[in-house]
Length: 87
Image (cartoon, rainbow, N blue to C red; front, top):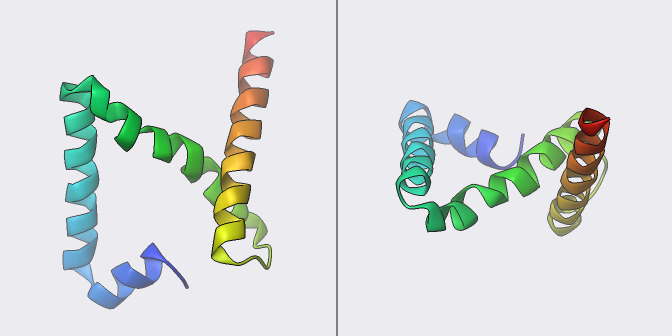
């Protein structure tokens, strides 16, 4: 296991709680100050769907390639989803 999962397992519950509180604080700040949404929420939209697809497919890629492909997959997925929902 790599990345955040390994960090959470290595640090245990305090690390998981800290990451959760940091995410909650960032989302709350983005809700209260909409300008912060660009820095807080957009990376989630651009990375999370693609990273989930890559985690499922498990291609043998290094980290920079994985992040680039995650962004491309997220944009492609959201574009197709919007098109199909608009029909």
